[in-house]
Image 1 (spheres, helix red, strand yellow):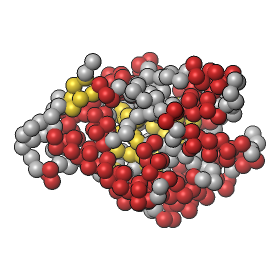
Image 2 (cartoon, rainbow, N blue to C red):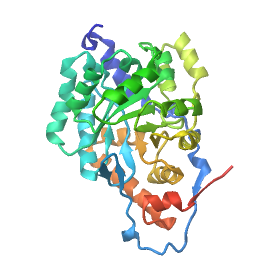
Image 3 (spheres, helix red, strand yellow):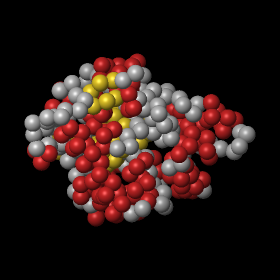
Image 4 (cartoon, rainbow, N blue to C red):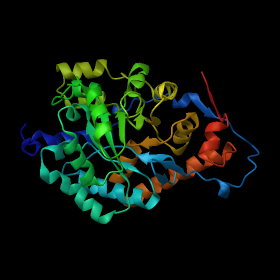
Length: 348
């Protein structure tokens, strides 16, 4: 394979992704199912707000809340400063952070310098590495370990994005052998392996099959937030085959809530996390109440990070406060009590 550093379209593609992902037209509003979830108000919570503890454990570590920054962007000229801003705030507020695809590092040795430089400044941040299924199939575990080591990653995400790969002009919709590759990585890598979608969710059949792979976590990443089919459609020429197909598939996927509930029924050997359309601390609390062990947030984080470190810090602080309010107003001292207290209901 040729080096991606020689691909003149790579930088413009990633810039397009950031620009289009923040466009309201790329958002699958109203499809996550979060508007159907209502937390039950408790007028007499029998605790003080100061007694509420939203902290949770993930892997062998502890986080301030079940919220984490979901994977977004990496490996191009504009990403370094954005990732540094996100990493600094995540370190300060004790949030884990998923990184964007490390695909470029497989072919361009200079690409890992982004994380080397970031690591010098944020030694305490907890990162999740990230590689696509299509790349994993053709990559040795040793090379994936090199990506994880460069990042000093707590865990490694393998992301599945078949719809995006079909609609991306430079896409590689080559997924044959994906489950075997995931199983191999989970068996051979020296840290936990996570599998996530990129905004289209998981079916029950796939969730059942993932029980046999040895992965530690499945992040359902359902329909309801940034829709990468719409993003790629926005990059295609008007009147082209890909532009037309993207419009046809503009609402393709399984909503976050439905995918989460299906995953909780299917999971026997992995932990279930959730993301997709989370736009507030209350949204995160709804998913935590349903049973998600951790909840990922992407678009609001990117928007704030573009405005600087102060704006992002204020956003995460607000999300934390909103999440803690949900615990307090349902009479839940901890996240475990929120999950176990029948504190939610589904509306029609």
